[in-house]
Length: 73
Image (cartoon, rainbow, N blue to C red):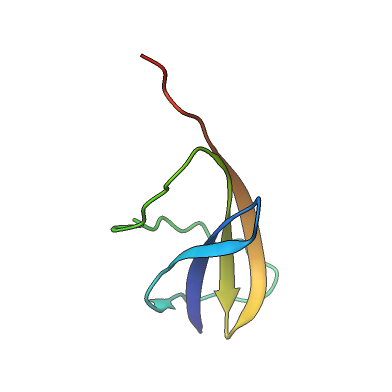
């Protein structure tokens, strides 16, 4: 199954990053698959909420929210 990850800024749904195709293999629809992906080259220009979305065969499968906070020194 061909899958990819989109990263979007939640405030305006702007697409900021797309992975290359990920060759994922699911046993069946009843099993959860844990995946680790390095987002090399993904630049988060500002703090805020970002959505990390998984698509397989161009259909949405799952997502999670990522909250980035600015570090104050």
